[in-house]
Length: 216
Image (cartoon, rainbow, N blue to C red; front, side, top):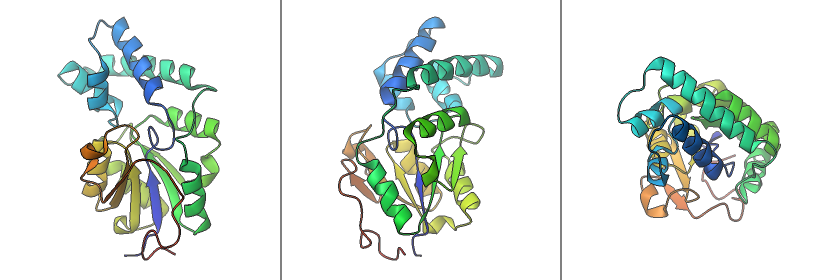
């Protein structure tokens, strides 16, 4: 099926936010006397907050605690991100290339909508996207719901979508949605992303018309 749309993850794909998220998680966990380190962070990266906190705690968090913790953690993140967040090198060339070829584009992220709006607005990227979907209230990656919702909003079949991801759970979510997926090794090593259709070290030269056969 010809390519009709490109669905983008946010953290680690469009925006270089990994360290900002790590520091916010670390501070929020320290306040609650919850052990947290970079290994746990790597295991949770790409999940929504409920799924990530379940991994950190080793059990499903109580609803009231989850709401309070997430509000604190995301507040810390947005305070750090304001005016400091940077795009992943080379990604804007890809955004332009897909836009110029007439492809629809959407953000499909596990993050809360406030984060998506703040980060995309800070980067000046909002105009590239026909839809922005937060998975905060959907079953989290590796479940496919956030990608399927994005395809629905764009009015395209899942099989005509390409997902750009950096996390193992995101790659698996894209595959579960019946979509092609390109993984960029910006957050995880390339060997961890082998379930993707293609793994790239980063966003080098922007893809030309021949990069994906069947594209407009």
